[in-house]
Image (cartoon, rainbow, N blue to C red; front, top):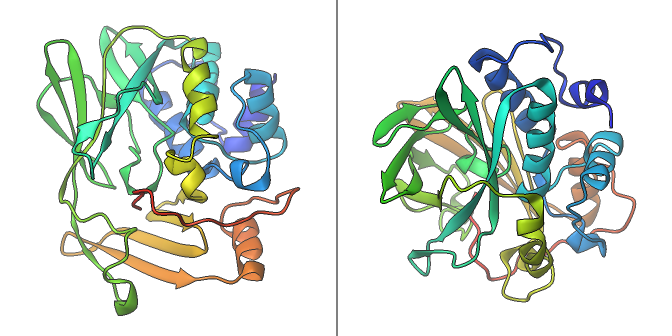
Length: 290
């Protein structure tokens, strides 16, 4: 695997030798604006693999994206290779309809230590929940970013990531009640502990998430990519663009229903993805908001 190829993939042209917060922030921002958060393999009849060389080939060589277990595994490798002090962590995602965190460890994130301070970096949550900058591991501190205000809280060794969101304006009135819209202004995202993990800890859940009918990832095909001002999301055949804070602390959310030919074109032009197999778009009934 080639670090220069990774840097080229994310469009990063600055220092390769510094392990400071500025460099960490730039790497995260470049990755989330270049590598989509997506599960399209599942809906093309292919698997979502955890092997690092396979992930590198898929994301860097074939210029695809991946879900958290893949894109954050790649990020962990890149940061570690650059010389950052890193730890792989596991998270439990909040299920809004059930009002509880997942019982299984289904999310991968990364802790980075710089000059004695700890930060959480995560390039794999996507949509409007995606952090754009590292979050300092401090309990109870509001950390404003472009997408929203993020807050980490620690209770008895468990950390919780929450988000304080803006109001949203939807000019397409026919989509005003879409199940894709986040209804809560205060949103719980996931919990985690600081226990170090390895990629092997995620193997069983990786298999489950791409095969179980109960999984949101088999229920819906999705692809999201951050931009300099917002985020594009494709769920099934519905394309959205959210522009963060377009006026008066309000996000603008635009919807467009696509046909089969338009989906292929949007994947190429907006997300930079050319699929080798036919995509079967799916918008099932599992909860998934943008």
